[in-house]
Length: 304
Ligand code: NCD
Image (cartoon, rainbow, N blue to C red; front, side):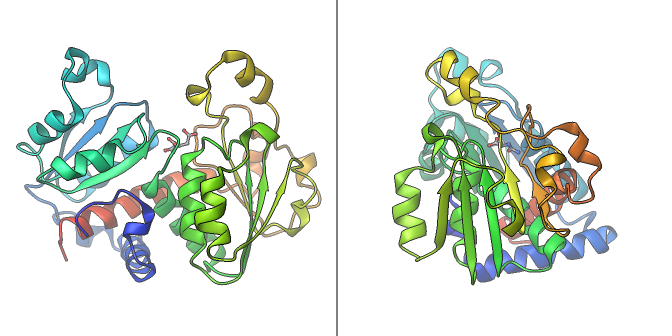
């Protein structure tokens, strides 16, 4: 695999191998400290990020490699009018692998065509976010000890939430998965995800506007932020932003072993009182993100 643009670029077998390597890194970090010596990762972030960019950078550093990059379009030659293609050709002269986030859907794919080094999509607009999905899969594997037989509630902005699109794509490959898709009418899952993923693979799903209705059935509750930056007008955002707020009282009917996830950043959709509930796993999820990205960098650089 040269590039990771879509989670579908990885087979189920390859995902399993990444999860196993990540678990081994967690147990034996000392075995990995020099694996990427003299290698360079470039992080090109044309859109804001905290976890994705810094976990990639921390991952490369823990493998003994180095990091270069920029964290906003305004501090790169994009501000002077340079094209993504030219930027990518340039960065390929200075680095061995590139992680790139861009507000335009498809930009990392275009970049990968011009690039001389492997490209990782670190989020493209409201489309995909495959490395968040790898993070989510490692989280589920560690916290639930399985990737099959799960009822997964996805709640919030299912329209613009790229993490949701990639996660549905990945989970649809496992046995006996059921989705409860919880969103306001205006933020329902896009038709293409329904047709090309859910219906094509005959995955069971229910669409609802109620967070409480199916709470008792959930094994995983994946909360998401309303994606302010993808809205065309402020009014719609303000009306929808606090549609769901998970708090302790809404969790009273939930299973004892529910796993509550969120890609973060959180705005208001999970009340901070939930953080003390042992079922809240979103900060563990952050930690898993670094380990799976270490495994991914090793795989893409073909380092054993
Ligand atoms: C997500 C993203 O950028 O899509 N964040 C992340 O990478 N952890 C989710 C979000 O921004 O809401």
